[in-house]
Length: 282
Image (cartoon, rainbow, N blue to C red; front, side, top):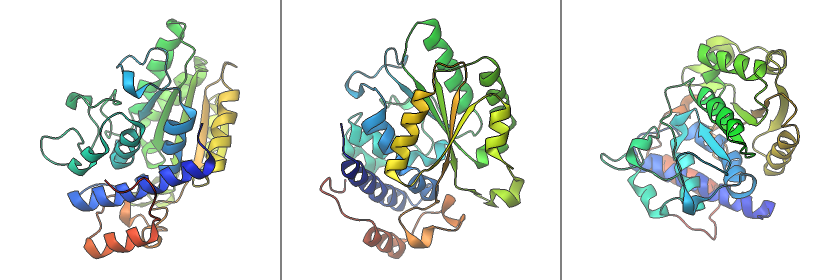
């Protein structure tokens, strides 16, 4: 068990890793990665029942996580490395040719902890539903989690997945939407408004929870509530309000940093704002 302060420290280190990885590669997506750092820290270090030392592709008898918005890969890689799936030192190879830490995650590279390629938006929830159905068929009581972006919800396949899971009562599934209201081309309300996600998802027969995704205690409580609602013939979705670029003032409040790497001056300014930790930089 981790304390809230311990989880916050891990999340702080993960944010430092994200900045340094994207700067070193001069390529990548810092904004959404920083915004979702609290969620993935909570999932991997406190909430999910996982076995990093005995990772298997089929995920039998352990919880499973699917990252649908795969462009926030620096976040996923940092969390998985600190959780023990692979060496933290490997984070220095992010987006290098021939390495396992590609810009969008891919299991072809044989990276422990990855089960699907992602980043082609709209697909991850469908895969998670398939995994949840498989667990039910195998009498496996563990939970399947999936994270999507809100801009990603402009893909039609996502809504087919929402409709299917609600209609088929896939009640061992927790979907999480990163609702930062920004995407690469601008605010989601301007690109293609999503309307009321709560009303839409409720109509699709999902249990809906809304949380502050940048408050560690709120994240932990929201995930606990979500777990308590499972097994009642409805899937559960958490609409998680986050700030793109969370923790770095000049990256917040704008969509600019969705997929833009910082230069050296910006990288140093960002690291000055992100607290150093006892964990240390890679």
